[in-house]
Length: 452
Image (cartoon, rainbow, N blue to C red):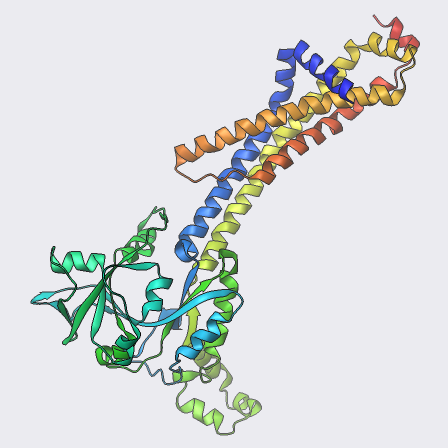
């Protein structure tokens, strides 16, 4: 085998231009496949980071109706949604797919937040505890965070994010200052800032901007959830944030958390009024159907207020499916060049057999068996295509990074694609070199020695 490989390299080196032209189809095909797989894989990784948990594997689970977040401030009766306590967090974190969870209230404050005589608009007011800060990646950069006494003693204290401080205090120290929220004074005890996790979403349109940067640049104020009813004037259900153990577990974590939280919601909740009580008072399914209530009940069920997670995961999956479908189509197109390259290998090996007919006859006359001749030519074909595959891999990686820089898309080189490409190129050499090798092994030694 080693001798056959040595002879193969001698033959390639002895006909450099011919060998290079023969390998060109293999090189182009392999390079195209590597470049396609690397850029598509990089795009999929970007989709994961942009749309699935923004890089931290967290999911918000909120009370929704018909796909929209709802709360008592919207004028809806949410009596069917229970007010969970901290024990529900223990149940959430006990789920196999969840590593952490927190519960919170929030309200967008477009008016009612004041520092002295300055009205601060567009602030997201959150009612929660220290767990909210940690799960969202906030750290205290000035002052202090929440302590248990802030909750148990119903202290009117607030933690501001850096953006709020810069816009509200204009260079003054925020800690110790008093801000008004809905006419209630709160003392600033700390300033928080989100830790830099290196996540940089790619913004290509207005929707991307609204999804990422508008949220990132939102001013945030956090108060203890124990004083939230004073601020909101509502005794309302909590919203939840769950953190999955990894990106692949997010779909499972969302489903399990939704099921756990929705288990406590009364059937049809606040959306079913008189008709609900009528059905509950003894109407059977058959009787309801006879009264023509089935369709109405179905419509009411669709309006049910329930806990629902963000749909970013499904959106990411759809985009990844589209990217993978495109990748498959492009790989098939690139495979055509490999087929052309394989035909080129077969052609050049047939020429080689013709050129070396006397050599083959001499070897057979000296006792070489058919399988030795067959092995020699198969080795030459596979060495030729394997060398082309290796060069193609290098060219493909370079092409992928060139395309990535030119189109400003991420690149993730796939190790399995490299291995498969090299092995596939070797297989092409064996398959397309088989016919010339069989022809060489079947030559009659007498006729071969007479060949001119």
